[in-house]
Length: 472
Image (cartoon, rainbow, N blue to C red; front, top):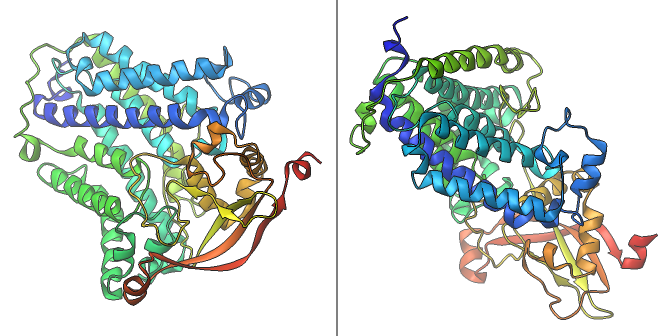
């Protein structure tokens, strides 16, 4: 068989960029786990993993932690993933033999799959599956000295197509504000975690907001088809995707969703765009056994694509669904509906008869005087779930009482998830959660008060509780 069509040294730069951006994303994901897993999911966390493992078998949640779980073992796994991804980012996998490079990428995938599958509500976001699916494909890309396999790059373009086209379809089928081009009248203000520039974006003229929505529809519903066109059309389509994603990076915090999407776009870029990168050209032939594995991978991913395609074409399209526990062949999408008003859950405590003092979170809005921070591509899992709690109390049913209990005990691990503990000396005797309506300040309000937000109390979310109340 003539394998010349199967590999192409012209895409060595594209592979280099894809692999190193994926390694960076893995590094961020493992560091997030190192910093946040113990208070959220550890043995004494808000939703303890041992309890989950006792109820879920290996087939339901494939994970190394079925063999053994302890907080120390988890830390070892997370730090191993951090070290390996940092080494890959530094170029270690580029010089390894082909089989060893595949083992390294497979190790990263297995380690992170093991974390995601026991992560419960904290790891239920679409970018977890997206990283796993992209990371699995990266196993077969090969190191720098062998030519890039084109089917794997095409599969990455297909993954990007599903991300973009699926998101475009869910918007058109979902909230009417996407169809009448008014979605961005609200979204910059009501998105899960606004960033430093979100207020500026929100205050852009409304005609420009309508242009933004129209451009989004073009990027998500038309441009993805160009990824499979001959060069330079595919490169142009990929550049449009990258520019759109950078716009999203500037306007809000979406963890590493934008970073992985940008990474996949580079898989479609030819030497017309990336030829300037000083990447050594492959100088080793591609082994037949590896090419055969790539064929098997391609056939498997084509078969798995049946479910996301059926979902996209169906009338009841769902967002961010994994159809198997390996998180391969997923369906994606975001913001099928847009909230018009921003609500926030504000947590407060008091010691005896003293005044109520507010707990500050690292990312989510709280103090109206504080500018929204830049967090992404890092991910603050507790802050994101607090946004969902403001939409519906059901999102916090399984963990919010334990969170309040941790505050009443001044649990040092949970408090590390917060920006400021107003009770550094001794824990509060009572905590409560209040419901507020938030909006960005106008230009005049900002000049007069220096505030970034205006907030108005709506009501009580959780009434004052003590440790005795929670023990009943």
